[in-house]
Length: 473
Image 1 (tube, helix red, strand yellow):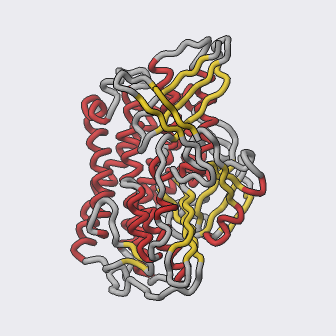
Image 2 (tube, helix red, strand yellow):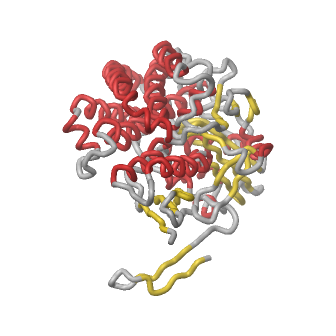
Image 3 (cartoon, one colour):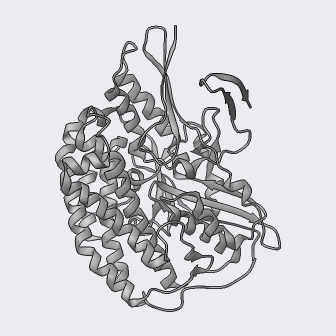
């Protein structure tokens, strides 16, 4: 008889998901899937709203990466307005986005992933959490908490709120940077540098002990996509997209937000509420690709800041060509935290950073607009259509987790085949399968925006926990 192993819920993730592992009659892994089980409706219930409300509305999608949604949404609105925002506003947005990347990466690495890395995949699950890390490795635990606080506090200083800020608006930002706030951020930098230095050193010491996991944590050739500057340095807020193949050769370049939908398609599978993005010229699923920290470091030629530049050179030595194992997402996140701290310091030295001109104004000049940015987890795209009154008639969001979706499913299958043999498994082996998903750090509440006929199952459960009726569409 066949058997299904279900991991529900997958722990230490943002949102709700489960993993199913299908075994054949001999107890060998036949297939495996990562299911995103929640559904939300931001694309639909934004219809009828004025376009200028979209950034603050879209920020409500997620409490971890609201800034990325703010920025991508505002850029889509600015395409509708046909305006170019002031230089200072662009710099302030860039700093806000980097602060979000720092706090989100700190959350992912220290709170969600480090219990596996620092305490062990087989450690007691009752202690395998951030409090266990703080107890076992107090310096690293405090460093992780402090780095997240650093990013969140910058967001609060700039945008007046840590979560769901409304400071980014179509045309720029609502208010300029106060000199006292600039000085407060500058004063926070030395501690941030010390904390990320500690984290990078600790990670490099333990990484070699995870060679078996590196081999099977979504370790396969794939395509990669991210924003990149004209000088081939890393970029989170502006620039255009580049797509490379598994050898590092460029498949497509200069993909602007207006061209995004021409080259990126979205497929729907019946087992998940998250879409599966793919590169149209290669079709689905052959055109699947990865985004996020691993993709960004595989694509860029430089970081543009001195300390992160040295770390990138070391990272590139992990493989000839693109680094393929998704285990290395953890390393890439730490390098991007260092880059974010350095870049924030550079931005604060801009002589125009305190300029009062931070917003451009205009009305509806186009009936369609798209905007893209790099969220912590990868490329984010917002695409809107409006009527002549500026009311949203259609919206589509392409989220990083959807772009990583196929790779996550293949990674779960690869790990399951390695760790589940003859139908036998332990809590520790199943934790490794979960850890594949944690390496990608998916944002499930962001990504549940399926197109077309969406799979839907409603179960009626009695007081004893028995399913007495079920409706499946």
